[in-house]
Image (cartoon, rainbow, N blue to C red; front, side, top):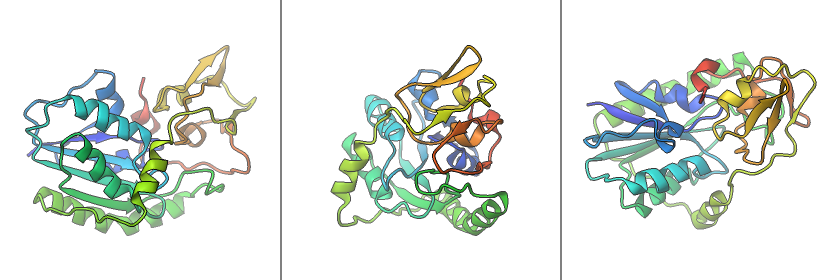
Length: 253
């Protein structure tokens, strides 16, 4: 039975995971939000694949659930599951996802988190190397295989309620797009437009041969890690996480 996978991703970890789901039709959530794609009315299985942000559901996925799913007839969706990527632990994110779906009258059937290379610069200033990436992903593949088997069999696995979830959910819901004064475009920028094309929130544009940033940054740091000239700088950060998918697969436009 075909699964529609709705993916929010910055550096590509969640897209890589979604592509492992057998027979899944994979779409970035921007395709739903701007009207390029609609979930077919008879869809029975929906996978939500995204990274944990501050141990909760990131703003773009939260918005997709409340605004897109919340405004369609979801009566055909008999099995909704969440695959969540994280640098260390997803903690409250699984239960937060369940609550987001409950808010729109849907039910989560299964949720699991998976450790992937951490690309979040405020916590990890030195980028994960290719060798480290291979080790981390190698260790999590068996867990992914087990979760895929579970979801193919439509196993029920509900997330547990963790003390303090209300506080973290409230905090997570405030992490909306905003200006990121720490990210700077250096003189190495050639105006190639890659950063603008992969930014999941449309925060970057090129003008006069140089990238410019607006005030809608979602702090995914895809622009920093994917710049071919390493022209985007962040205080104290060194190296770039090369990611698990081709840069062209992350292009939104």
